[in-house]
Image 1 (cartoon, helix red, strand yellow):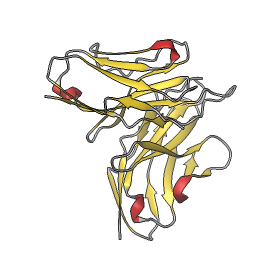
Image 2 (image 1 turned 135 degrees about the vertical axis):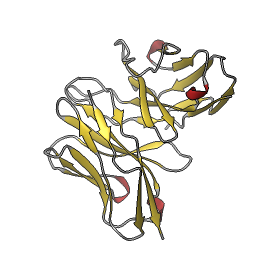
Image 3 (image 1 turned 180 degrees about the vertical axis):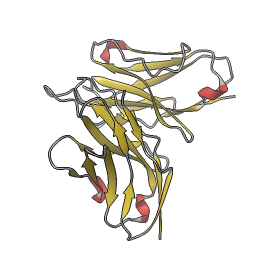
Amino acid sequence: GAGVSQSPSNKVTEKGKDVELRCDPISGHTALYWYRQSLGQGLEFLIYFQGNSAPDKSGLPSDRFSAERTGGSVSTLTIQRTQQEDSAVYLCASSFPPRTGTNNSPLHFGNGTRLTVT
Amino acid sequence: AQSVAQPEDQVNVAEGNPLTVKCTYSVSGNPYLFWYVQYPNRGLQFLLKYITGDNLVKGSYGFEAEFNKSQTSFHLKKPSALVSDSALYFCAVRDRYTGGFKTIFGAGTRLFVKA
């Protein structure tokens, strides 16, 4: 079946420009995550959405970063006034809704968007 | 706050030898623990998870992991490494009692298996 889809796969932008990264999760998955993978930095948590609850934005590195999830499905991560240190691979993941009392479902990742800020 | 440590940036193993990739964690309560693998030019894939019960968890591709509560560790193991196991491995933790899905990953360990 269809997995998590991210677009674009590659994005090159000039410093100071805004970018939008898109994530289309697996149908029926209510949890959606954004992570950033920088060389040598591992996976940095950015934000996650769970159903209709307020998103957990605790990982967003600055107010230049924002994300929304429309209709409980597609999500967009926006980076305003991009800086060279924003260059990284941005990964989206989604997860099954929990059975009652459990939240141990694994994440399903997309292939990421490689962002290069010149 | 949740955190995960993978103390080794890189692990080198000869094909056929056993391998161990280390992971320690810190959460306020009892955790769910996960291992993921990232092969070159491919997305992250789920390998295995610890929920409860038996401390030895078996997963995909012959991998297993041992949960040790007293040492707060969840080391990934395989009895006999293959060259095709060469990849980037991530340990992850989720607090079972928050009711949410926030998942924190370690920095990753690159495994090289030599023929």
